[in-house]
Length: 88
Image: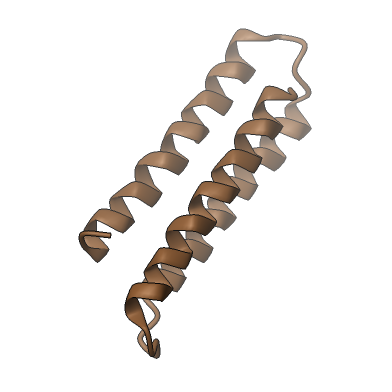
């Protein structure tokens, strides 16, 4: 991990892209359930808020391990969200 700034950008770009894909899927498919789409959007915002709060945490003993764990968590949650979007 090069910097905290890059980690924040990774979180922003990754979740932003998933949000765009969700909106595009909902817009192109008229048979998609709007409640499911809205639930995915809300989950994206919750994941974003959670990860940014973890990045901004001040009381961290081992910063390198902490930020690496956040990066791994971002990847796991992004994969989960993409699976949900693909299931629409």
